[in-house]
Length: 155
Ligand SMILES: [Zn+2]
Image 1 (tube, rainbow, N blue to C red):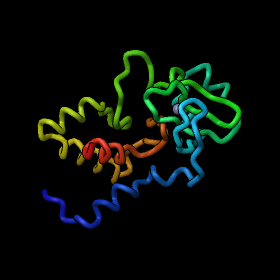
Image 2: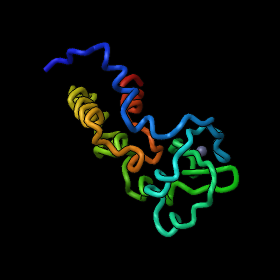
Image 3: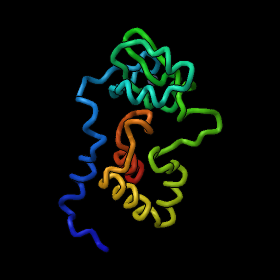
Image 4: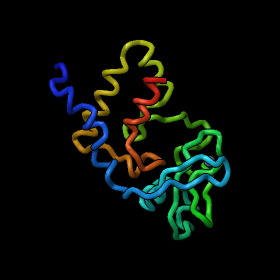
């Protein structure tokens, strides 16, 4: 079926339920790489940080550093947790684009190159629309991955 709601499509991408779970807070600057990082909820951190570090997370407002070259995963003004303590950054782990539906960056690149990208993204969009994604727990950023699809498609 072709998409009969072209005008709603962009809106849909920006309005899945997981994008509304964290209130808009100001971005924080990563103490290591200096990039502007998005705030992350304690729920996301508890699902991402491995044991035993997940039992020792100090209170505070944390942000997630998405830079692949930076060793910092989460940080607050007084504490930081390295990426090596996060589930998504274990040795041998591929770079993942969609953590809810297990789509790696390389799988997405292959799909783009072989004309299967639309079908792959439609699957994710459909599941997200049906409220079946789990970005807040699965994605280390706690955010919806659909923006990352857009970014990689246009780069
Ligand atoms: Zn950083």
